[in-house]
Length: 373
Ligand SMILES: [Zn+2]
Image (cartoon, rainbow, N blue to C red; front, side, top):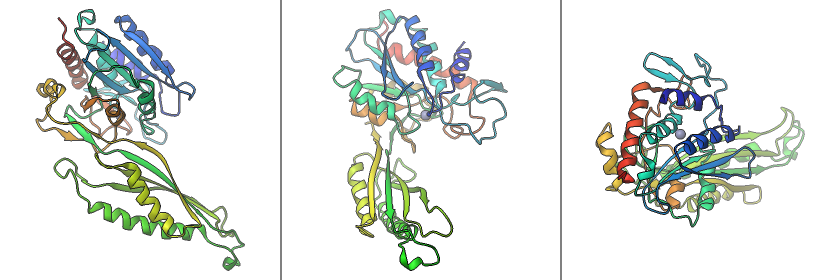
């Protein structure tokens, strides 16, 4: 049954540049069939929405279960079968999103069917988001959409962690740096100003900053790279071999740790980049996905522990919607079926037994967190 549900979810090709209203309508229908209240929160982007479903006494402090409805693209990947047709080979279920993270969505709908939602003492709230894979845009919108609404203070995000409980992750921020030069015929380069060479000097300055960041070590007990990581991600400049380029644009990502201000880090980055040539280099902060840090000892941790594959709480290297849920006042843990190592790749899969286990976990955790009487 949960396999059928997962197959239905995988069949919606919800790559982030495509709509999610189809899968949202299906999930809404499933939640309504369970007797849940359903709210669809539309985005100004066409075809995009967040979905909030709830049951139990409104405004009571139960539990939030959260996941994203979108998936990453499949283009150029060597899939062995149609990525949008869930395909079982051996004990694995393959399909785009099978692991990241429609397995958790399917397990939630099946797990809740085993709980008598009419008898809950505290509220269960499902938060399904759009555009997580392109910068947690849906959950960022939720911060305003749900502001002022009383929500449970504990949240579980079912990202694939192979059932390890994760309680922190760095954030992610993106910046764009534009270097401006002056075009000239390449036979007379002295009449122009080469924007690509200017960008080269900017990259050197950024590498020095990245090195300084590497020496500011924090959370060494939890992170493999316990510092702010920087990645020069894209560069675009020049139009023809015989023209001195007048423009070069560089995009840079960096990952602020909990407790650090992304804006302060960006200000350092902008200062270094623009410091190379203040007249011809400009910088802008494109977007910020907040970091997440949840204290140990929450009630949710206690409920997840018996199901955890390893006793230690860990950190994710990737960002999740958890940073935005934290801004809504939730203490969030990340825990779910499937491995992040196969996510985003060709032949992504979730092991069948982990999918079934996730159904059991959801049923038990909800019954205990929300007090099925
Ligand atoms: Zn994910």
